[in-house]
Length: 520
Image 1 (spheres, rainbow, N blue to C red):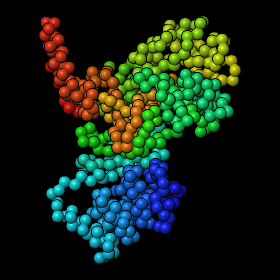
Image 2: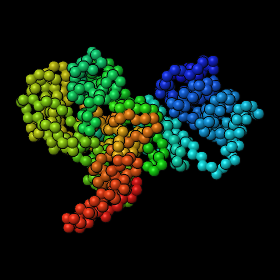
Image 3: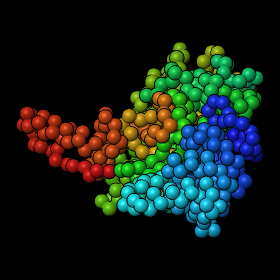
Image 4: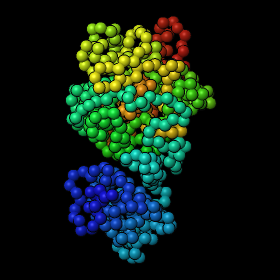
């Protein structure tokens, strides 16, 4: 499998570097014997293409199955220009492959390449006390090939190895029966013959409209503050697999990297510019019930699928358990529809309300609404539960409540993907949105992260854990996101405590603002 860049670097006489940016899929693909494009550029001596690859953040320290870095290969093939380029980018001249050879030992004795490597090694050895912060790759792909794009892990801060205390999964998994409704006859589906961009698409109508543009990004009018539910086309639809209304189900497409931060443990950053409204990744983990979450001591990776607030807010952890990065819930999205004249359908629900206690979900067909396709609606009271199969060819999504009233969450502690490492940020560049595709069981949405603005290459990803999170966890630690508008730093906390103390003094109330938070 050869990409355009790999094909271009295979032959030394292929000419100059390709015009325009290198497609990110070609930069990150792993080929024969786990060589990446930069290995092939070093092998053929294409220094122009090597520069383009490095500009696209191709990993200079990647090693193949023999432990050879691009510098090893350039030295062995006597590619002087590539060796000089790699050394200028701080390539490690002391790195040993599986045979115990350094790049210097791979070069021909007294050759021009050997002299360059020897000089670089001598300069390094002459200043042993000089701090050299080399970014070491500790894993070529934490996803082990389960994602479309490799996710490398690097560390330039300390000697911490790549996290290995969990199993990487690319999709939500279960360890006990969840009884998710996957009956294909219960799916709402479209009969589109176009790309599902028209207003007649049934799946788009369930989401109010199709919120994706031709590039698969959210439209500018998408409500980032109160995101609606996204219903993507599914396997019951008549449209093609590449229709416009399929984005989250296509999986990870952005080039991401797990890296060691200076003061927040592990974090995730982008290796490419990500435009506004782009799907970045999904929060993936183990689907568990609320009652199961109650008995788990570690709540650092819980993401509530209910809408009543974070699970830990109702369960204070033991004093010995202080999770470093608990995950917040999402506010309740809704499906805004103009109120029909007949049945009493609710107006917009408050974002903190839950489907529990509000009333059962109903599917209203053409006979209830007069015209149009069936719609998912919420009742303001609790009429008898009923499932109606609407007129026409579309099957109604089952409108039933959970018999035991159980709610669910995602726990990424033992099973998860790259999103389990995304930190909180007071000025987030990601927003979580509930999405449905392979099923429409509203108890089990998939959590998709979309960019809220342009994310530049090298920028750390983050989303807002929410005020309810910090109202509890702010007593244990403070935020270190570094934002000028940080609301939960130790400084901001001290200012709020001082204001509360002054207000209490003015009102003649006892001072209760003495609680302090430890830095995170």
